[in-house]
Amino acid sequence: MTEQTIPEPVAAFIEAVNRHDESAFLDAFTEGGAVDDWGRVFTGREQIKGWSDNEFIGAQGTLAVEEVAAEDGTVTVIGDWRSTHANGRSKFVFDVDGDRITTMTIREG
Image 1 (tube, rainbow, N blue to C red):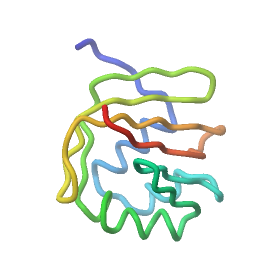
Image 2: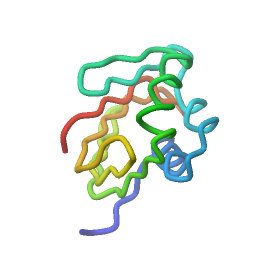
Image 3: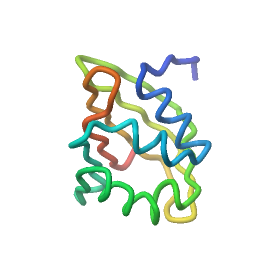
């Protein structure tokens, strides 16, 4: 695989996730930001934190990026997700507004 540049703010977001930095993870989202995890949608900081405590940051998750694509405010990252909750190749689609994430959608990679 060739080295790929991950656009901001997604690059900083992935770095925050991989170091289990909950504050930086939550701050990356807009006020009305949302996570769509296989059709389960968590909107706003409180709901995202509740989900993340069990399944993302709280599960010591890390993402090894394998593929990146960016187009018109959307960044798609495919990689190997490892955590105490779930493991496997996953696709993360980020909708971005300026320097914040509006939606992170997680599906099978």
